Length: 169
Length: 325
Image (cartoon, rainbow over all chains, first blue to last red; front, side, top):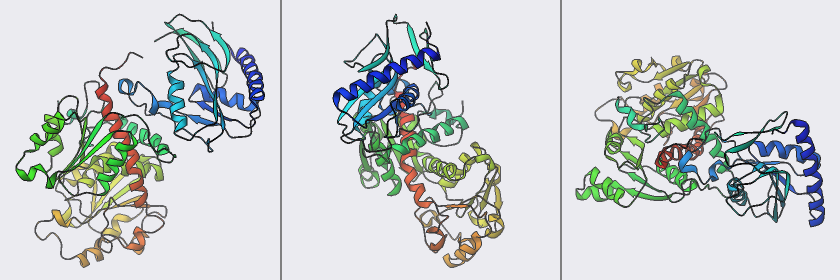
């Protein structure tokens, strides 16, 4: 079951509407959106446009914060993290493509706090699948998927965006 | 198996970093790319990442150094490692303890990495051969043999300012004979595929094997500087000179000191580098050292990110087997 680009557009529109409602409910205007490399940045770029956010988009590469560094080491292709403004007392929307074990989000939160102390963090993901290993949940998800443990799901892009499921390598 | 394979583990990953010689271009490029990512860390509010949290790194210096030891310490701390600085020249060795006894004592304290500077060529190799399997050794300069981390930060500086290596002509000027930095630079430049390497020095300061390393030798500074993209000046190493290699400082400066008028022969966008410390008015004029084409302070700034890259890659082998994914 693969989601094609038109499906992705529908998912993004749904996420955008729910995010707008959530921001409204919490009385947040001018949030800072931060995507997680690589898929999360693609999703964030689209949501940033749909929500017409004013603050520039940030990007995090969590490679230096992974909990499995001693097992897999540093990937030399780490992209520099780029947070273009101070996040102190700002409301952050953290964006990733797939939420699975929760370890990526744990690492991203740690890195985010090395840039400052945000007022709050909202988590938005394109696909929320089962298999959590940490107490982390999405505030807004494009879709929820129940997959057997040996299946994995990956966003391909940036143009067009496609969610592909396959056997875990 | 040649002696340099001691630097790699059985998967071909970096374990020790002792010399550039015998390392492949892809590995050097990976180190430069990783360093590029680490430069963004040093520009943040919290200049620290948790990669080497819980690891202990020992700076074991048998020879004086401020810049190198400080940037190694800074690099280790920015990776969240714990750091011990041991000035071994005034420590147990003066009480008769051997190099290996010092190593084994520190290993018994569960240290994970040793950064070693030693006045004898081959000291870091010797220690690496006898180190416990979980320990990594980084060479921070051994005698007149090698100073590979300095060479890598120089390559990083060249790549940042001048781009692709294969287009470049690089001149190394001065006391090549006594310079471990020059030896490592020549290996790095040739592995990374620069177009031309020039050595510019008086006859008494050129090693016998200079041309077999692939460098062109010049004894006239003006002739050698013509159309170069990068000029690397070396310090005159008084402490390593035994006997009369040179007529006088003044005469050396007249012939081989880098001044604005000699520099005019290099390409207009040429950069000037120096591994430090500088002898102003001996190998380089202050106007050049502090001038717009000098990247000497950028070299120092890049030292931390490059050493973070090398330390984190060498420490990685300690995790054991590669995961299937």
